Amino acid sequence: MMGRSVSWTEPEKLAALLASVAPPRPAALVPLVPAMGAMRAAGGARARTAAVTPPAPAPPAPKKVTPRLVQTSDNPSDRLDALVGWTLDHQPCTGAFVADDNGLTLAAHGISEAHVALVGPLLSALVAVRAIPGIDASRGALWLGTNMMSWVETRTERGGFCLGAVGREALSIEALDELRDALDTTVRGL
Amino acid sequence: MTRSIAFASLKGGVGKTTAALNCAFALARRGLRTLIVDTDPQGAIGLSLDGIGDRPGLAANLANDGAALAGVIKTRLPELHLLPMGHVDALNVDRLAVEARDADVLRRVIDFAQRDYEIVLFDTPAGLGGMTRVALEAVESVIAVVQCEPLALRSLPRLLELLAHLREVGASCSLLGVLSTMSSFRDPVMLASLEELWSFYKDQIFETAIPRDAAFLQASRAGVPLGLLSRRPPAVAAVFDRLVGEIEERIDLQKGGEDDGPIRLVD
Image (cartoon, rainbow over all chains, first blue to last red; front, side, top):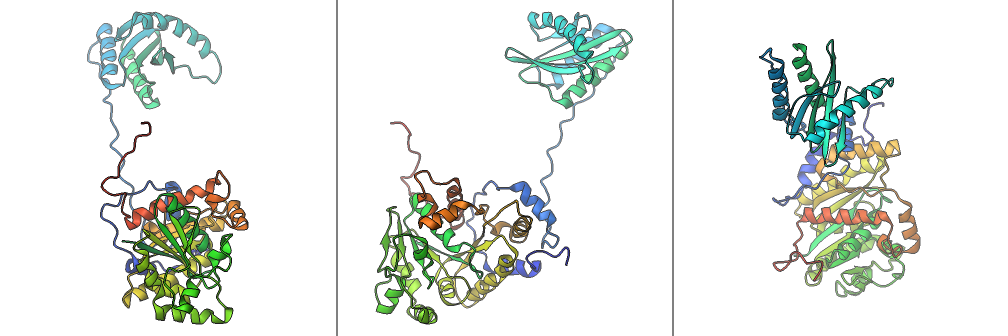
């Protein structure tokens, strides 16, 4: 008897019965927020003899696709400016900067002098953090007053570079991956 | 128009009386003038509430050709009244249903309730014959009460078959919804039963499931609705507030009228 439903219900017969006893529902019925929605969904999937397949889930909202950064210049200054511009255009931030691992700001837009001054000590501190086994210091985020500064780092033969963004909230992991990709693209040709 | 709902189940002990009583209390607490009528010859409402005892009610009205609403008892809530069954001799149980049908007593209860009540709930005995059938023939809607266990689930289609048959022969009663009771997610059989209910009955299932809770036993012992078990009612009492919200949605109960609207918290 394995697999038989606990209620021994014949789905087709039951569906016909329910249809014959259902009341006319008010037209403007406001749907309640379903309680235990996830469990209901699981229940629908587990009942092997369900009369009707569960309604198809709503199609997921189209994912926002961020265009990759394309560098068209060999000029380092132009490449860094393009990187900062791309960051401002495609990430939820109000300011962006690029710095080397000595804390020297190479390009910046929309961030205060205080933030520029902070980059050096922050990167110096990360040098020590980087030495801790198991800690990935190549990206992170930090509250600075009312702003959140998010950053990614990359290492090259010429040293390390840091791309940072300042905004109202921390960037997502996906956004940080995009920043890292854009930073790699930019410094590869320097 | 007064709305009428019967709580019914083929299987006994599923919580019909508890559900009906606590729903009536919750409806009254929401300000709806509510009458709960005991149609169970065993007097389930009377057995559930302290202070009812053998007060005369529906049975006496039938025996004496009395007014349909004679014996209505006022409660602590001004909006909640109840009509008990009163004492029924065990030898007269079968005859009671026959006399009730002949006298069309439950339809008369609903008719007379039009003036004073917005909603009338009928608690029915277990089974599909006798007073249950009389109630289903009289009311507008039925709530099928089903305990979260296999036997109760298996008996549920029988109630629907009766309902379909009664509609074929002219009754207006329709299924308002299926109410699951004594639910628990910790027991695999109960969980499987709930899942099947959700799967097979879909929108007919009330979102609110009545959980298994020790407070029901305490309320039964004290002979009170959950909401009056203590000054601060047990948390589980809130499920009936949610349930009656769903019931109101489903039967499209009239709101407070044209002058109803937001009321300032601070004057």
